[in-house]
Amino acid sequence: MEQNKPKLSLGRRWSEARPTKTIVFWSCVASAVVTMIIGFTWGGWVTGGTVRSMAAVTGEDAVVKRLAPMCIVRFTQDPSKDHKLKEVKGTDTWQRGNYVKTQGWATMPGEQEPDERVADECVKLLMLTSK
Image (tube, rainbow, N blue to C red):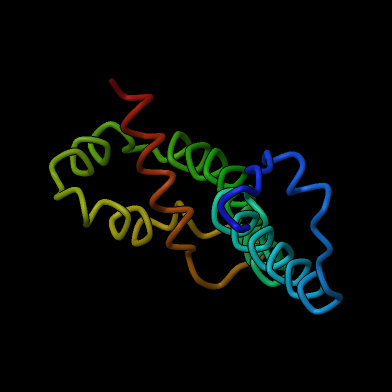
């Protein structure tokens, strides 16, 4: 008898399928988990903590970018700027920021200590403008 039974098409088998509540529930859970995995790995989703840290870094970078031109202004007001520019260029790349800090150009008004990131950005601007 089994051999005489006609084979059902995929569409027919799909329309006759009756999943249980358990299968529907776990299918929904699996779909949600797969969606989250894809979203966080390839979809660009991030958590609130990640967004806060990204915003803090972006804010700090913006402040440094705004303060570095002030450092350049302080450099241009130095009477021996040509000699000091030659010294900066003669200094090793990793020590140029320290040179700018010791000159006081990266110390912003109202601050006691020079800012290292402002000094590094100031060196970049000095090297670009002095070419």
